[in-house]
Each structure stands twice: as structure tokens, then as C-alpha cells.
Length: 335
Image 1: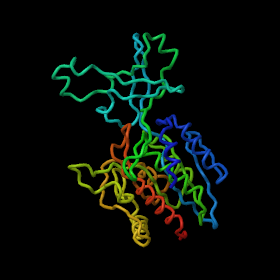
Image 2: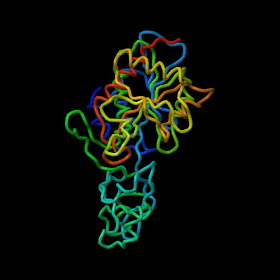
Image 3: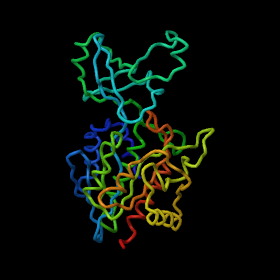
Image 4: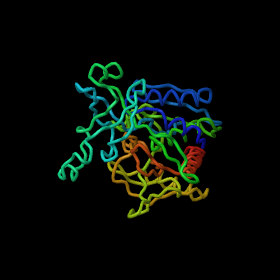
């Protein structure tokens, strides 16, 4: 695992539907190692030749996009109204720095000062449509010289190490998977493998498009999963204990035969794997599982604290465990 991949990828802007900059950065890292192409919705497919052929492809995939904001209106005073793209906890928005549009115009998400609010307002959750982005413009005309309706806005957050092997950064729940796939593509593989960096995960799920196009015999989906190891949590999905195989998510039950293969492979190679987590949400794996006539699929989760926030915290050891386990699955001969 190359943390240099992750450092660079974390800082790139790429909300759902606007992932081109992320795809271009990935292409620069894998160009020359494998054949690649992009489909009409922006998904990046990479066809890596191995030492031996497979009769039916194996698909390893992750998503590129991150949650963010979309500019919907400019006020007469020069402030920007926005809608959220993907699930964002509105409690983390006020006071956050953002970069808006192609020129990364700096801004701050503004709200009424605490001493100007009523007790009733303070007791209610913050509603995103009541918030504004302040880019320093004094009028609509001044703001329109810098940005336009439909521009994306992403959080500003530096990639940093925390302590020993922990890292903090924006969009790590997506870009960790991208970094893992880059490392695998640059490695020598025993069998042909198709990799997909998908779009629109936070806007409905581009995973289904990729699975439909490839028609794989089986698929491994890699992505972030919310850690539950903070004080008061259950601790069944924790940082530093390896990847996570939850077995079930809302909308699908993962293929039992393939899941058993993952568990036995991890055990045989002493790769740490957490299997006690039950997902109440979705990862996109269900979209792959239900594609075409059905695709045996599993999800390998990377535990993340504060997932979907401007400062996701993860553990380098978990990334390494998922990369090693995915390589071990690629090494399994096709039936």
C-alpha cells in the first residue's frame, strides 16, 4: 500500500457527478501498467493482464466520489445557497472551510451567531437549506464573477498522520479504496482481473453500471464503513483490527459461498478480518449482487471514524490488511 497515493487522492475534489479530477489522477498512476477506458457516466475500467487467463472476469471495484455541496442560488448580498450531495451530517457544516468551483474559490459555511439565536433555535437541528457559503463577495454580481449555479463545493481538510499509523483526511472512505486498487494494478497478478473506479455512489450508486458492463463471475467491493469504536459504541467494527466483512446490508445478503471463501482465505493467511458487524445501511454491493442475472459479491470494508465528514480518521494497518486479502482472493484459481 502506497500512502503517497492516498495523500494525493484525498485532497482532490470529486463529489458525485463531478469525479473527473479523481479519475485523471488515478489514470496518471496506472497508465502503462494496464489497459483502461472510461464509460459514458465516467466510471474508470482497468483491464489488468495476469500470468493466466480467466474464462469469466473477476471484478474488484471501489467508488471515487465523495459527498459535498452543489451551489443552487446566489443571494443579492453575494452569499451562496447550496444543496447537499450524499449524506452529510448537518451538525458539522457551520464554520467549515470549502472550495467552490473549478477555481477552488475559498469560502466559509455561515450561520447565525450563537448569541443571536433563540433557545428554540439552539435546540433544533441545523437545516442545511438555512445555511449559506460566504466567499467574501459584496453582491450577486461580484459573486457571479467567481462562481456559477451548479458548481461543486468540497470541504477543505489537509491529509495528516495522527499518532502512529492513523491518518486523517477528506474523502478517505472513498479514496482508500482507490489507493488499494492502484497498488494492485501496479503489481504482478496471477490471473486477469478487471478493476472499476465507479462514479455517483453518493447519488444513487454507479456500481450497478459497472457490474452490468463487466458481467463478472464474482465481485469484491471495497469501501469505507463506519467504525463503532468510540466511547459508548459496540466496538464490533474498530480501527486497527483489519478489514470488515459484514455479510449483510440493507437490500441484500452477500453470497454465502464467496463470503466463506473470504473468511477461510483470511484465516489461512493470518490476515486480520472483522466479521461481527451488521450493516443497517448500504454500500453499493447490493447493486452489484442484483446486476444482470446475479453476481456473487462481497464487501470488504475499511473502518472509518467520522465517515462522510470533512475529517475522516482511518488506520493504515486496515488498508494493508484489505489490500493483502484482496490480492489473496485474486490469486484463487477460477472454478
